[in-house]
Image (cartoon, rainbow, N blue to C red; front, side, top):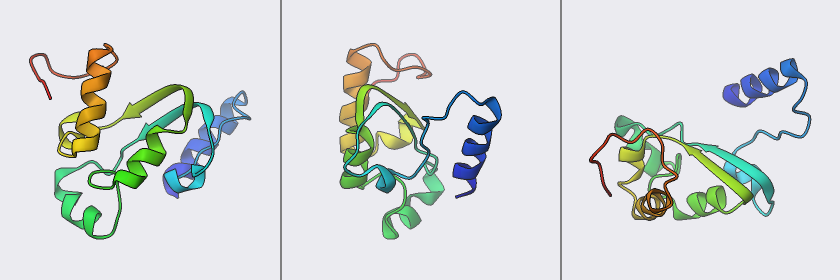
Length: 113
């Protein structure tokens, strides 16, 4: 909720983003948008057990991952810890596909999935 309010405040401040919607994955269930930016902010190794137990984050939650990555009509941008996300087989497949397309930034050289 704090992140949502902060992002909305930034968009409002700049005044050119009236059509930007900020929300959780669940808020976009059943909707599509031209551009989707997904931030996997809960991607810390020390949070994995807690997150999986309480269905938070994306690692190990195929339904949340599916909703997050299938709403974009033209462009999907994912911001997150690739090494941690790759623990999950669905994310690993998505990362591999993005790598094949040359669409991954910030990955140390020599790292493969």
